Image: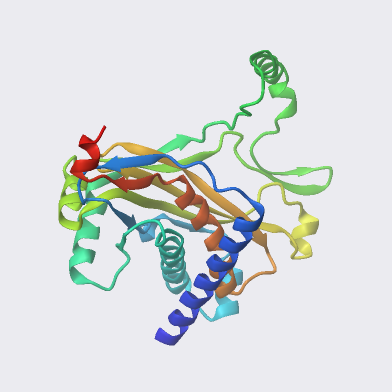
Length: 287
């Protein structure tokens, strides 16, 4: 088992290295917010999702292909996502992982889970920054007039003899909320933390809009969705949302799913986290 995990960690590392090189050649680095701290509490704490917040529609295919049951699949996905996040973040942050074989950290992880809550939220619409106000207003008016005609009822239905899956038109995600106001202060002081990344939920689903011919041919897209929330050391929410990617229904090797596709969503999440700059006292006083 340890050898299996070591091999998985190596695959994730190699995949992230390859992605970094590709991104460096073809893409500019995304614009990042920056937090300026004047103390040493600047570590990034990564909290894995609670096991109860794992939702999968593909376990019946992936499980037998790898000789794993439901609990084992969920455990490997939970660890694999944590590994991918750590490897995506470690070049920019001093990281502490709460998916750890450590009694003290596990005790604190349980305390954090009990001190936090969840909230279903609507995903904010993605707007084109280059789109003019007149165009936006026109699109809103057209959308209101034609909405009833264009949007089919959500759910699975028969359409012209074909089985079609249409999700709810208003996508939602799971955000994290703070119940115990002292929980992040406790983590900041104990772990010298400055940023908190919570993985709230993991979804492994059939992609929406798949028809029966794709199902019958076992050739349809699946989607990975990771719900997450980021807080700063003042317990302020920095960002909440979903990172997602798709992969083929013919990919059932859990090592490939984690090493290739979990690394994609991990990179998306870390690119939404603000960078941390620790300023010395003399820097703050300098003109």
